[in-house]
Each structure stands twice: as C-alpha cells, then as structure tokens.
Image 1: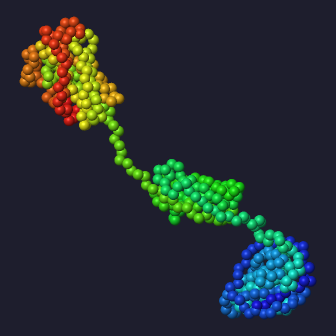
Image 2 (image 1 turned 90 degrees about the horizontal axis):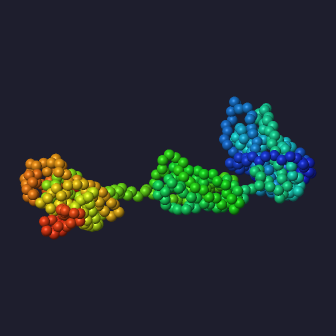
Image 3 (image 1 turned 90 degrees about the vertical axis):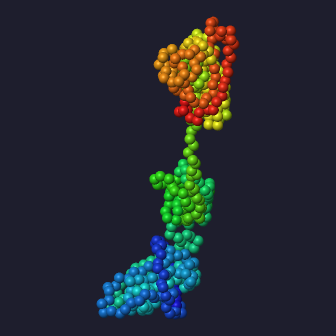
Length: 459
C-alpha cells in the first residue's frame, strides 16, 4: 500500500476556505500492492494510501468515451482524523476501463500515475506530518485526471477539514440516545371490548418532545397507526383502534412504537383479541295473564257447579300465591268471593266461581268485577250473569246436569264446563243486603280444588 504525505508548507496555504457537504463514498472492493510512503513535493501536497482497483474490464478498440466520476468519503473530516494514516479521506473513481491512467494534483508526485485494473479505483489521502495543526480548517480542493489513450478527463472534487473538537457530522447535533419501549393495558381483550374502547398504549425512552408513531398490527399488515408527541421525559400514551370497516377479527396482534427522530423501533408487545362469549338468548318472562270464561253466562248455568265462570291465570311464578277477588257491581245481595290459591309448577292457577243458591238463579243476575293478584302483577277482568237466553255457555241442547231449579236451560257450559278446575261458591242472598240466610238455611263459602288444566286454551 503506497502512502504519500501532505507537506506542512502546503498545508498552510489552504486555510480559511469554505465547508462542503458530506456525501458517502463507495468502498473499494479489493486492495492492490502497497508501496512505502515518501515525502511529497510542493505541488503534491497530500499523501495517498490504500490504493485499490476493482471491477473487470476488457480491452477493446471501441472504448467508451471517458465519463469517470470522483467521490470522497468522508466529505468532512477533523484535523486529527486527517493526520491519522489509518483514517484520512478515501477517493473513489468510477466509470473507468482497464488501462485508464489516473493521477491527481494533491497526493500524487509530479509525473506519478496509476493504472486502473477495472472500472473502479480507490486510494486514501491524509496529512503525512502527523501534526493535526499542520492543516488548518477549511475546504481542500483538488482535481483527479483520467487518461484513456489520447483522451484526458479532469474531475474536480473537494473535502472539508474541521477544527478538532467541532462536530464534523452533516446533520446537525447528534440525536440523543433513545431506548424506546411500549407496554399495553392488557394482553387479552374481547372483540366487542376492543371495538368499543381499543387498546391503550404507553411508552418511554423515546426522543424527548419528538414525534412517535404508535403502530398496531399483525405479521401481514397494521390495523392502526397513531402519531403522538413524546413529553419532555420521552414518554407517550395513545389509544389504538381498528382503522378499517367493521370489527377487527379475533387473533394475535402486536403493538410497537417508532421514534421518528432516531428512526428507532421499540420491541413489539403482543396481545390477543378473543371471540365474544355467545350466550343463549334469554326469553323475557311472559307477563301474567287472566282469562275469564265465559264472559257472559245464564243464571241457570251459573248455579251449576260444573259450569259457572272459570278464572284462569298463567305466567305466575311456580308455587306463588294467587289471590282472587270477585265483587258484584252496584247494589247486590251476592257475597263477594275472596280466596288465595298457589300456582302450579307451570305458573298456572285456575278457579271456577259459581252460585250456590240453585233454587233462585235469578238472584245472581248482574255484572261482576274480577281482580287477581299474582306477585307484583294485578290483573282485572269482568263477567256478567244475564237472563238473556243466548248469554252464557249453554245452547240449550246439552244434557241436563241437575239444575237446582229444573230450568230447561240447565246443562254443562259450552266454555270449559267440562275441564278440571278449582271450584269456589258465590252465595246468593235473598232479602236485604248483607243477609246470609236463604230459606232459614245458613250458606257458607266453600272451595273445591281440582287438577289445573294444562293450557289456558283448554278453558
């Protein structure tokens, strides 16, 4: 490797020149023979070292026109680094052909040349004196000459020498060291919860007051990006939600932060979106319901124990108390019915209300109010006992079931008279209101329980 030196006398002649920008130069791929360093003349002020030639080229009568290019690396170097023979400035010449002759006006001695072995040639120039102060800060201009046969090309170039201790970079002050990290508020979240609230990200170790991009995604693509600004301590916080349409499907995802100032990524933090648990849709509790059947009944049918009026309740709580009250409307000598039964295991409770004074059915003619209490529900209905032959449940063609007064209309009621039920008697009174005697015989309310029908439709 040949090394040439920069003469101190020449170094003094280049002070006070302007700076040039830094552009990285390509490295030379392979070394060539090394020669011992020798003192340069006043014209060849710098030494060259690490001469290299690379690439392959074939001799041809139709050689291309000279179009060589020169680059230097670094373009900005400190006085100390220029005086270091292991550093210096590397000059790289490209666009050569094998056999091209190379020289420069700064490091080559007068008349000295080198021959390219391929399409690239590199060498390094440095201050051979070893004294950093021998070369003042400023711009060093030089020219490289390339000859190909009778044609010659001169290429100008330069590099800048900076004062020791000054920044010799090209992008201003060096960015502070960063060590970004992110964390999540959970490592598992359901689809619906993520769709509603997203996932919260916090981080630290970013460039203070710098821009940070929080990214959420999978191995295939991101699902969200949010740009935030770190605080003066380099901390961030953000919420990531799905940027696309619909909901983000269940699966494994990750979140990381990108420090824009230093172009540094934080380690990724993994999390999982889980499928929502499916619950069997619950059927809302049906409202309690009261059915009065029939709503109009003849006096003859009303006094038949197997006819009367059926009060059927459904949708109560199984085993719950069901309270029935039947009151005659207006002035009446009929005693009110008031009783409580329990709902069966299907929440049903039925009673059959009828008159006990079979000898005087007309005593029950009138309208009746029905009130049933089932838990918090209060149900109301009404029915009428009418002497209209077409009212009630009998059509007059059914077998006589033993009407107390022998009325020809007696028989089973057309509406539910033959169904099992709980029976309770309404007492008919003759004479003034409040009397409980009929023909001198005391009449009492009684209740008879039977099997509850399976379905209200059977009533």
